[in-house]
Length: 262
Picture: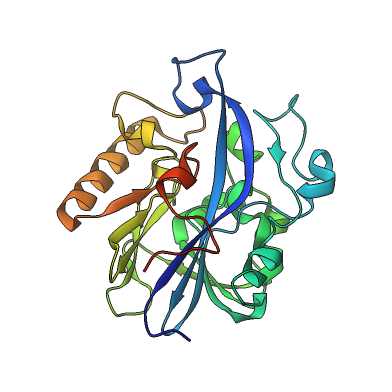
């Protein structure tokens, strides 16, 4: 185990979406390619995945696993080598070497790879797990796949509010309810890069830093705006940079695994 923290950003899949999915009411008819990014953090006390991206079954059978463009906003584009086992192997790790999996929320494009790291401890907000079991909005029902989440089988740590993952102040979970009831972001204090916040879908893309925009998939617009505003304030006070999980320019801004940030 390394003595310094290393942050690897990995691309699980990408989607071609109408711009208005990212910014409701703006950009209709413009197609944008977005990434679905998950992260590996190598911490002295254990390896952490932040989200897991999509199921590797999407490589060959996305219509069966995900659905079609007739019943989803878009469909994933995923190729060989984008699954968790392959990406971990590229940095010298095996799935059973993951200690924690922190889920920013439990939508299908963030939980699909759970099956590859079932021996880990999974960490999410209690409010998110409770809602995932009984979502009350049709658009949300399709996003939660209980068969992937496996709440009664896997080892879950349900947290309430802000949480220090290792107790050393280096990995802090920040509640950001709005996109979903139990969404959370993850702040990591890297030695050289400085503080970075993996925003989860509290702020999908850099464009959504603009308070005038809302995404198409949103449990509560009012709470989304409040959480975004508070997270930006938190980042400002901490001097933190944002990683947005669906940013089209992700790997122009940040290094892509197997390169890493320290």
